[in-house]
Amino acid sequence: MRILGIETSCDETSAAVVEETGDPATPWAIRSNVVASQVVIHREWGGVVPELASRQHIRDICGVVDRALADAASTWRDLGAIAVTQGPGLVGSLLVGVSFAKAAAAASGLPLVAVHHLAGHIESLFLQHGPLPLPAMVLVVSGGHTSLYDVRSPGHYRAIGRTRDDAAGEAYDKVAKLVGLGYPGGPVIDRLAKGGNERAIAFPTARMTHPDRNQPLQKGQWDFSFSGLKTAVLRYVRAQSEGWQPSEQEVADICASFQRSVVGALVDKTFAAARWYGARSVGIAGGVSANSRLRADAAAAGARAGLPVFVPSIALSTDNAAMIAAAGLRRFHAGMRADLTLNADPALALES
Ligand code: KG4
Ligand code: ZN
Image 1 (cartoon, rainbow, N blue to C red):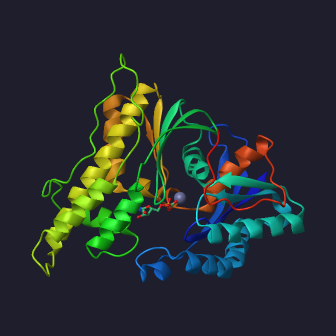
Image 2: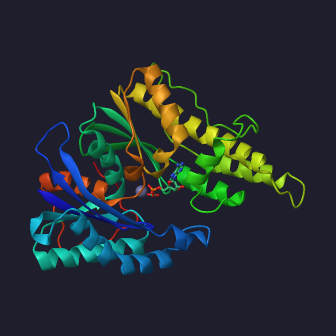
Image 3: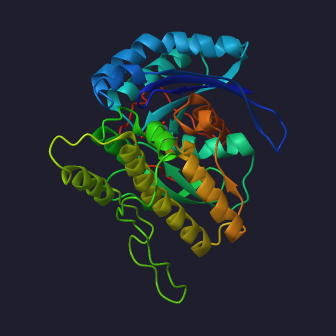
C-alpha cells in the first residue's frame, strides 16, 4: 500500500509518498519526499512569522502534493490513504495541511489518518533504519520540542522528560540571532563551531547528577532547561565594551562553547535515562539531530555504553512529510481513522 503524507506544521510545506515493502527488515520505502522551505521568507524577520507561514503554505500546497505524486510515479488511484499532521504547531499553518487533506480525502474517497508531529519525528528513525532494538530511549530535539521518550513497543511513546523552557533548537536560533548570524541558527552555529575553541568561554553546563538506582527518582529528573544558557550568552555579549563587534574567531568561539554546553546536556541526560530504563538502543530525531557534534558525541557515548545509536538522515531530521506518512501507515494499520470533522490542534498531546 502507498500512503500520501502531508506536513505543514511550521515553515516547511511537505508532501511524500511512502510504500510498504513487505520486508520486515525495511518495511517502508520512500517513493518521494518534497519539501518547500520558507526559510528565505522568514530569514528577513529573524524567525518564523506565523501569518506569512500560513499564506505561503496555501500558495505551495497544491504544487508540492502534485510533485510528490509525480516523483513517486503515482496517481490518487494508487494510494491507500492520506496522512496529515494534526498538531502541535502553528494553528494557521496546520490548518492548511489539514484542510487540504480533508478535501483530498473527500474527493478521492481515501481514508484519512491524523498524525502527531513528534510521532512523525520518532517514526523517522524506524523509516530510516527499520525496527530498532526495543526498549529504545528516544530524544526528540527540534525547534519547538526537546523531549525524551521511553519506547517499549513501536507506536507507543511514554514521555519521561521535556524542556522546562526553551527547546534546544530554539536556543540555537536565539543565540544565532544574538550574535548576528541569522535564521535558522542551528546549521550556521554547527558550521562555525567547527573553527572555534569550545573551551574559550565557560558557559554553564546543565550537567546532571546521575540517579542512584537505590534512591527514588527525583521529579523532573529527565527534564531539560536551556534558557539559563541562552541568558549566559546574552550576558557575555552585553559584558563586552559598547559597540563590540566580535571577530570571526570570537563568534566561532561563542558558537563552539555554546554548542558544547547544549550537546553535553542532551547526550548526558539521554544516556543516563537509557541506562536507568534499561534501553537496548538510543534514537535521536528532530531538526537538531542534524547537528554534527550531537551525532558524533552520541555515537561516542553509545560506543562507551555498548548501545547502538540511531539518527535519521539529514533530510529526515528536519521537518518532512515522509516521516508523517510512515507514522500514518502505523496508525492506519492500528485501525485509526479521522473523519471530516478533523481539526488542527496546535497543542496536541502525544498519547501512547
Ligand atoms: O524539526 P524541525 O525541522 O522543526 C520543528 O519541528 O521545530 O527543527 C528545526 C530546528 C531549528 O531550531 C534549527 O535551528 C534546528 O532544528 N537545526 C539545527 C541544525 N539543523 C537544524 N540545530 C543544530 N544543528 C543543526 N545542524
Ligand atoms: Zn519538527
